[in-house]
Image (cartoon, rainbow, N blue to C red; front, side, top):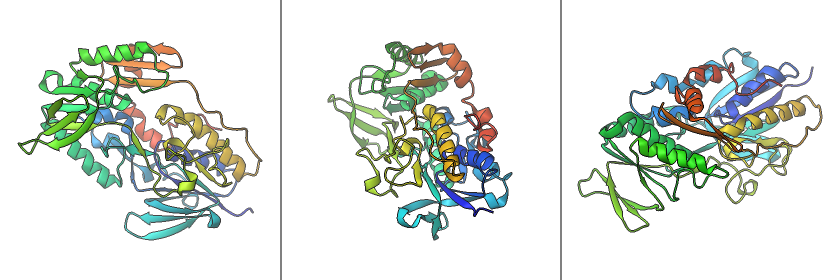
Length: 385
């Protein structure tokens, strides 16, 4: 019988978790396989709903944070291991990865194949994505909810998808009870997003204003300081003006979770460089996927294609089928935004979607009803091999 092959997946988020399920469901029946999933998070954060759930009372914690181990309990124990910890270094020459576990133990794991799927964080550190262990994320999450509850004036900076949705959700919930402001560098929402139809920007702009969001255009926040009262925040803008708020939410991009990756494996933007088969350039048995890599745009809507391909490529490598065809990334734009349950906008390719359709599919409950099945491998966002 062939010796057991070990695949280590670093990261149990939107790419690493479903990839582990794919390998365990379909590849493990073809060859002797052990999957080790390593992540500091004991719970999967359903952060596709975070823009609404950050409002206290909207979505309970148990719907947003789903235990990961429970979702893998149905696999044979010899085929799967879940390690709570974070990678601190990779040694391709010895096929090993160093890990600092959540309890402070330093361990070394050896692999036949390694997948880097550690994703990204919000650049400002706001917990709309995991910020560390589950306990650390949950503490920061509750702190943010409390601040939103107490604030009467909230300023969101950054008119990308997350900033637009947060401003819209806050305004949809609180109306005139709280003053919501969105600061944008451009003249309209999503101005920095590639290939967005002008009509989508116009629709979002109008809908935000209908909800009562104040839009401050063509400026950036330069500095943030504490007001004389010791509570408010004073924002100095690059247009020379100053605004004061109870709560400032900077949603200006992401930070890649790549601190353990050797600089030579990264491009100038910090993404792990991949070849045409999603392997790390120059390394036969190390792969990467999702935000942390150069596999495609840093957005959830394109990860299905990456998961399908990498699962097939690993299956071929593990079963010695030979090489697979080069990866073909999705080129078309896919955007689906909900501003509360009433307003929404979406685009696939050059097609604008009806707002009522996006609202019905996404805006109603932000797919919360599928979360537990997804974490358990029952509702994977892609077809089996």
